[in-house]
View (tube, rainbow, N blue to C red):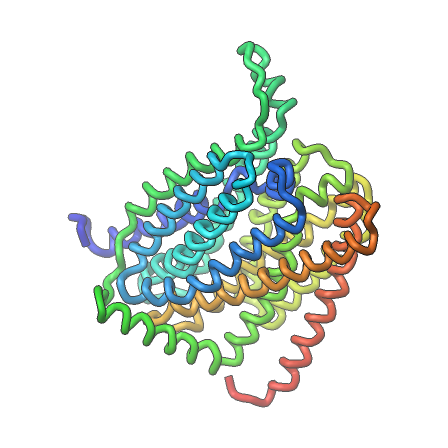
Length: 433
């Protein structure tokens, strides 16, 4: 430790820093207008979907090696690297010119963003979990997760409202009218704001303290990292409960994230103005305040199977509302999908940390990230193929019409995948975990 404070006091500082890092890293101002932002910059739906697939693939390739390195060379180093990569990705996003190079520069942005996600995923969580005193750690971690969800909800509320407002040129022109300056375009203003928070995120990452561990460097660190990858793989694939937890979580996560990726397109489809996107995004964020204490009580009262079944029902309910495309009132789907995402994050983190050995914790949490992003990449590719098929089958439908046709397939796809997973769970019930 490089601090004069007692070790336990220094480690306790990691918990609020973990919350601050997670908030700054994830609550991005451009999220409420993510889909329409890329389209307004000049990309097509297919290009946007493919960029998100590239982002997911970058995470898949880097997630497990970065998690294994975090377990070996120290979690703080990987968290600092993640924050530095966030600064780099936002710089590219801010200043990529609208030219034939735009797609390729945004591709670089997605690669840097994926690398940042991979470095942070697992390392920050493992650092915080191992900073807790070993006695009564399960209950203490539930309280940390509840606090994290509440702070993230508040931060997302601010980011969603502010981001949508910054994107709305008419609103900005009205607010700035008294200054005599009328902005030409505000498309990237939410991105500029996120660049500022990325610098704060890097400052927070530098303040972490590494929990006591046997860190290595150089050639031995690489060898130990690959040994951890193998140990983590054995831990995941020989534990039936962890394997099915990840499979169920990735299924639900991929469908909800696919909706969130195109949420602004859906809001445009149901005739909501851009400024309302922020209100809906902030409302979705505030659902975390309700979901956090409810999820903590559910972990104390029910088992993992019951809790994940409830989350699956919420996901199916939200997806079932998408094909209806009710003008304005179609925004109700945000409620079940938002609750499902918040509860899913809580349950997955809670059970995986409790069921995993500290020596491979960041590695196993990285397997979670790989699983989630494999699901998201597969969903993105299938959705891109589906929109391309709809475009060829309905050449006169327009972008909104093609999008409406594509999302009508999501409820049935989720239901079929859920039934297949349930059948696999039933068929393997007699095997030991």
